[in-house]
Image 1 (cartoon, rainbow, N blue to C red):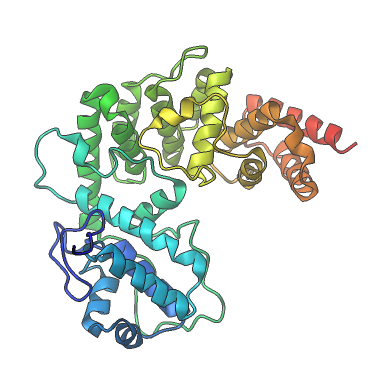
Image 2: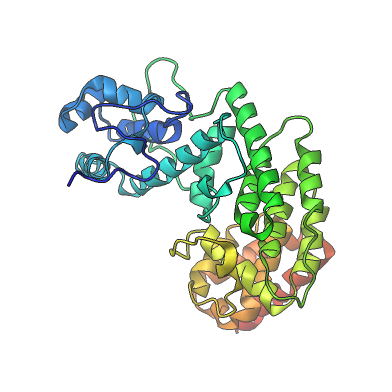
Amino acid sequence: MAPQKRSGSRGGTLTRGQGSRSRVAGGIVCGHLLKVIRERIPLTQSRLAEGLGIDTTTVQGWESGRRSLAAVTSTQFLRLKRYLLGRGAEATLLPLLDLAVEADAVIEYSLDDTLEGDDITQHPLHSWVFTRASTHMITWALTGEHPTALPEAPASTPRRRGPTPDSPLLPAPDRERLFANLRRTAEIADRAGERGSLLRRQALYLCAYDTSAGAHSWSADMQQRRPVPMRHASWTPAWSDARSVATSMVRYGDIETLQAFIERGMGDDPGEMANLNYWAHWLGLDPVPRASDAFMSDVDGQSWEALPLLRALADRLDPSLRAVDLNIHSVWALIRSKPGVLSADLALHRDLTARVGRLLDSDVISRQARRELENVHYGLRLSSR
């Protein structure tokens, strides 16, 4: 039996690429990441091609995005990663290639103007809850912003010769078309009700990276179609939708929507635990793949550990972050539900104490966030005795 093609593939081999819906973006993120990994070894395109037994033009096609790595078999993709690792590639970068292939699938699908009908089940955003790492791979092509999961290049990395792009940023016309199609997708998912809730939420979140005229008003209109769930109600997909929209609206300077969500959408046990479950998955601390947002309704929070989550959230207690009020509330809620976590790590205790002090001295947080910070500060003092 022939090796099975990887998910998202439209056929092809290691030495032959296939056409895609958008030749500009068929593998633009994965290709750029491959170039980053190769250059950091360092390894030339010809040496990589020689090691894999393929033509240099194939490697060039991958790195330019003209040929998508999604079109090779799983066996061949694994062979590529093993070869890179054996030649000295940073081990932490290789798993990012899989995330980059996912990102390319979303981008390619969202650039297709020929899709018709309201069948939402085929969209890559429909049945897979994306994490921060995978989402940042997508937005790398939308904004050019360096993904959090991709460490900066070591100082020893050779400089590139000639003018080469620093990111897989899509050309402006492609970005405009992608956002237009994502808006259409979100509206189709909105009409599908609960069945389209995950697709709606994730499409809306990506649309928040659109800085063009009218993008804010469109997002605000979509947000008004799904009011913030009140406290003491059982968890529903509308909760995660409202949270995602509220956090995305801060990109337009709209802090009030987020503060309203914190006040009305949390404050009871289901809402607080749903928020922590969301964080754990978003930050990669819940490694289980999720086909829907329903995992957020787990009131026990058994899929993640409190200490790693607190470490990750502590880094977000930064007054320069636009959603800092939500980050403060999340730290407060985590400590409230797991009080012993404050005394579990002395270095984290010191770090939290310093961060809380800086935020209390600032003027960028809401009154509710300040009250919660004062409670955290009091808890830190008690746990240090």
